[in-house]
Image 1: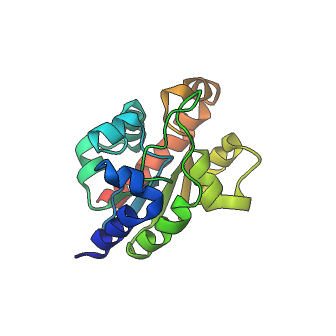
Image 2: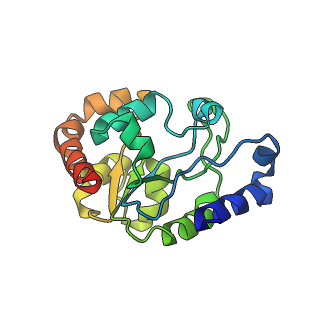
Image 3: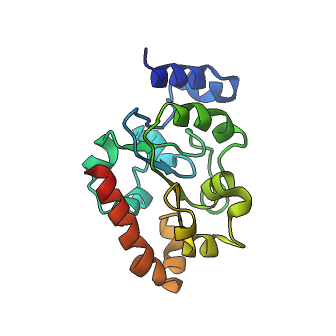
Length: 193
């Protein structure tokens, strides 16, 4: 059994996740020893949980476009890992999904990252990932944190969530696709070489 298989078994046995394990819903994450880029998002959505494949929705399509990679590269490259803030769909909220459960990333990200010694950059997709990983280093809001992405490189790369709900944000902040996305693609290309 690999270290990742062992951690997965521990996640599934954790009482916090029993409701999912009893329904035969596996934790949705991907980790490899060769990983150099880690994508940290919010949590799997309804479609991702149903298909058992993270980022399997319009948000994932946009994220792959931003990264400048194919669906096959995104899912199958050993150099890309996926560690959402929660590995299970947390449920529906009034607008969007419920937030990731408190304490989940704190418990499971450290042992998984420790088993991925080649990680160069962690993409922090959305506010939850930025709150956890950047903490007091964040700027006054998500927009300013993303605008100042270069202050966190090479270890972290903060991004706005690629959700269709953020279409208005993208229209108001044209600098993001003009300035930030080219740098993101350059890093992604280098990592996948």
